[in-house]
Image 1 (cartoon, rainbow, N blue to C red):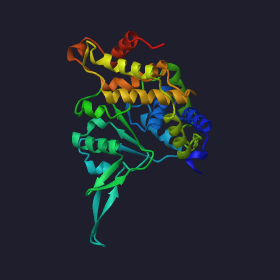
Image 2 (image 1 turned 180 degrees about the horizontal axis):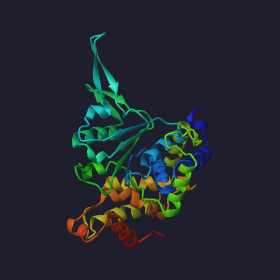
Image 3 (image 1 turned 60 degrees about the vertical axis):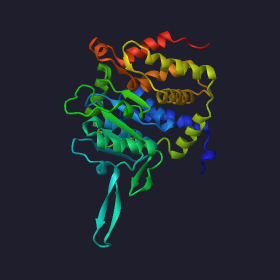
Image 4 (image 1 turned 90 degrees about the vertical axis):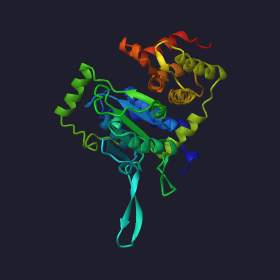
Length: 323
């Protein structure tokens, strides 16, 4: 099968079916699932924030199975070294030569669990792989598999002993998605599944099956790239990002890279919604996940309860929408 043989409408239907397939193991969190699909379409990476126990790891494993992709998980700790992520040279006594042993970064979906618990040098090794999509060994590049998406998690309530990601590194993530605690009804649904015998370690028993593949994903990416964007929408995107830079509570606003990410996410959302053009509403829908991690608040504003989402809400209300 060649890429051109996959019908874009069939590819869209397959990616939309992902949400239902993931729902066999994950209760709720439709927004997080859709955000991960948007990231896949944009070849972008995701920062996933949620307290322990809200199924972040299960979400990534289920998504990988439903897409028939490889996945790996790294538990980031203070003693983790760059070679533990990217791989290292190993001496072979039989041949008296060094060979490269691939690290867990050589996969399709990589869950970087609690990325802020490892020192900056190890964080940087992963972020370099994210940006370059390759690992350099003695000056020789080793390309990572395609697709390659990093989903890095953070605990929003426990910061003791952590190494917060610098703004320049946060800017490398396409989206920051949140996984809140479930509602009462959703939590009842979770417990009911477990009471009925659901085992999160056995996705086959949950009947999670591949509903899309890499060929369909490639066709979906090509179709997304063909979605048209009017100059008025581009101007609206720029105005939103520029408005964050002059907001009173903000020390550092959204960069031009952030504006590019916002437009790419809006394009993917528009295509998933069945449109071949981007509207201002598409931009507004993805603005919070695409921009919230790119805004640094003033310390005094944080003490007064300001949040990046609150800043974005005010900006989206104030910036005129093109007609």
